[in-house]
Amino acid sequence: MERPERPRANGCGAHGALRNGFVRGPPGTQINHIVHNGGLYKRPFNEAFEETPMLVAVLTYVGYGVLTLFGYLRDFMRQWKIEKCQNATEREEQKDFVPLYQDFENFYNRNLYMRIRDSWNRPICSVPGAKVDMMERVSHDYNWTFTYTGRVIKDIINMGSYNYLGFAQKTGACQEAAAKVLSQYGAGVCSTRQEMGNLDKHEELEKLVARFLGVESAMAYGMGFATNSMNIPALVGKGCLILSDELNHASLVLGARLSGATIRIFKHNNMQSLEKLLKDAIVHGQPRTRRPWKKILILVEGIYSMEGSIVRLPEVIALKKKYKSYLYLDEAHSIGALGPSGRGVVDYFGLNPEDVDVMMGTFTKSFGAAGGYIAGKKELIDYLRTYSHSAAYATSMSPPVVEQIITSVKCIMGEDGTTIGRARVQQLAENTRYFRRRLKEMGFIIYGNEDSPVVPLMLYMPAKIGAFGREMLKRNIGVVVVGFPATPIIESRARFCLSAAHTKEMLDTALKEINEVGDLLQLKYSRRRLVPLLDRPFDETTYEETED
Image (cartoon, rainbow, N blue to C red; front, side, top):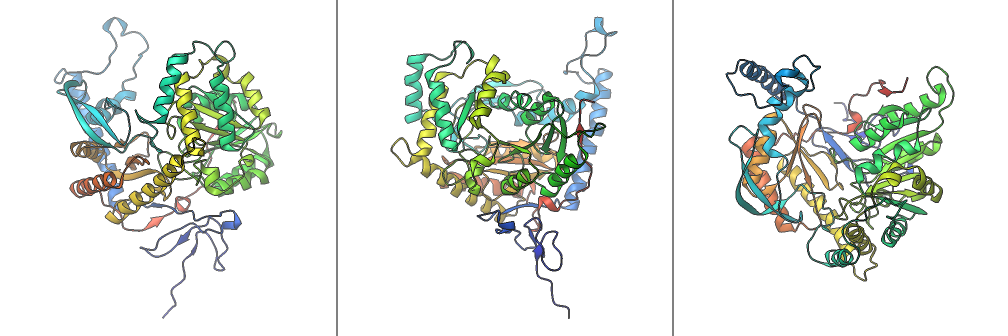
């Protein structure tokens, strides 16, 4: 009888040569990243993505096919006035114009999205804390329009807001400090930072953020999305190369496109794909001319908000140093939510902040406020103060918002004289691990890293997107459901966001209801065959956007 082979690292040979740090075993074997991967990781890095069951994938495609056929049938009925047409159409006197609304482009919205539109844009009427109040609404025309009943649904457990550290609250030190600043400075500044809108509070915030992150300097912006989309074009341009993770946020994608630089995409968190692009960029240079690229900028996120995965930052930094490129790290979801001190993914891996050339993050999540920041070397920040569109043209941050950030950051750092901030960071980590473990035990397919507070639960089939959101709301649990085109067509999901404000009783209540709805909708697809993301088929095709 042949001796069974011992599980070994993904992609390694018979002698166990390590490549990606994954271990694959027979079904039921837990898959972990190897801690000592090249000596780069100082802590366990457990991340897995279970393969979509074949039957589920087939039924999902069939479901979309049936919905599409019925969509065409409904369009036919609307054309012949059998069914009332409620979507936007061109006026009769403009029939000879080039159509403003392309009919086929709106097909998905009319016939698929509209049927489950009640799962989104639900109006809440309270602080988005651990529990929220929601205005009840009904639709009598299949979600084309909504009518408010006047009733408020109280105490819904909020599993959807990015309130990671629980600073979104209407009482406490942050609220009191913001109210005091509001009475002194007012709500708005009515000018840009370069004109009459530079307050002492802005200066204090930027010095505090730089100290918090362990870098030389920082600059704050009034909008998180614009922090990416308006600053990347100031850093790179024509003749530069951007290497972007395929699952990067829309703000990073827009910023890259606006820059005019050439864009090449690497597979999500796949270091072989990234290194191949880096090698090709250095060997071949720019298209046609073969001149060296002026700059090579790698764009990654700390936590990917749809996958729940954490960037393999030690390996990215190693590649960045090896190939003399620059690194832009978006910590929108990871700052405050990761690391023993809440300083993000750099703190999580125990790395040196100086190894990241451009550190970006937002104040909209862990800090319960609004806006974003860029941090790094003083020369970088001085350059952006002059050339960034967000600095030159955008109105300054609101003073109460600035004070909310200052107070919450000081709380995390312990400079308020308490240990509340550190306790919240630890509580979030405990809640995350507990919630993820319980969902996996129930039999759900859960994506991402075990330390990520973003927890995707796979739904797959289109009909189950709306059904899951509605059933959870019936049970007083507020969740976010996501489908195509925000995700791949067969990977629709519910996305839970954990918070330090969630008590164990709240989580147990939510888990009980999720378990019940999972049985009702038959969502427990897990077969415990965990397939790392890096093990998905990889070809050498890259996608390129260029000005040529």
